Image 1 (tube, helix red, strand yellow):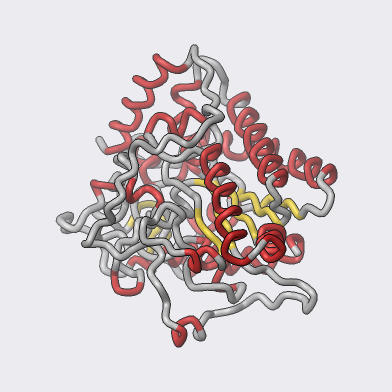
Image 2: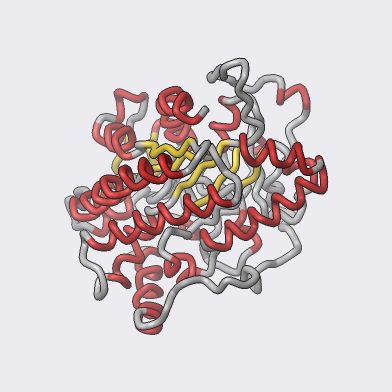
Length: 390
């Protein structure tokens, strides 16, 4: 029915070979055999520069205390925050082609999985840092591009190591290894003291779990039931945050799971009435319920840390149930194509059904929210959680 069926077949095939194997990522160097070093000429580099005049027009909404500085935003996770890291990987999970990016400046498809900017970009702007946060794997990246933050997220990744392995994207474990590289690079640029300040004072965003719950659970269902798997993911999330803290991060905002059962693609796969999958939503809530106390405990055991679980579930669910309250018209299908199943390569410029005004939709394609939805979510939540992170 859709690319998701292809994905699910890949999951099933991979699961036969991996369910009996140890799926921890090798401790060695990240496997980057899929990297293509030549950037496409048809798309704007992910770290497209913003001139000084445009930078001065940042829409800053968060005023920090005088003694607090957040020098950068650093993102880990999946396609919700990926700013183009998948562009040069040998994976089908790409979005560096039209109509993706149709509302990005210049209408360029940067590799962000939406029509414009992603949450990490809006967080950076609201804090007065930058309009966009560049992708670490952008071959055009220069040293000075690293000094306002960086984005390691890879579309298709997740807390479960199997999730990234199936679709050949950058696992969270390998994203941490890139972070270690990044630390050395900024140290070489600004010196050890300033680099240490940046690492300790930047705001870290950790955004994952949707791909695990929506897809990889099928492969794991022989080992875990619908309660055990969310618990396993919460444990993996907590371990990831602990490792991130060990590498110097202090201000860590971990996004909760979202109502994955209400994504347009999941509705389509749930029958002709296209109702939300309550089972998937229950798993997402179970993950959140397990992760919340785990992060509280981790914060107490980690001196100087500001580790916070950001509840994205409630606001997105409310936007889906009451779209007009937030200025939207459509919430049960995406803007791209018919909005029922199109995502990735099925969301393309030859599809004649793509909507004209994505800002009236909660979802851009059948899996990812629109730039406007991301903006609403960030603006509603940032003011609530920033005081807990400074």
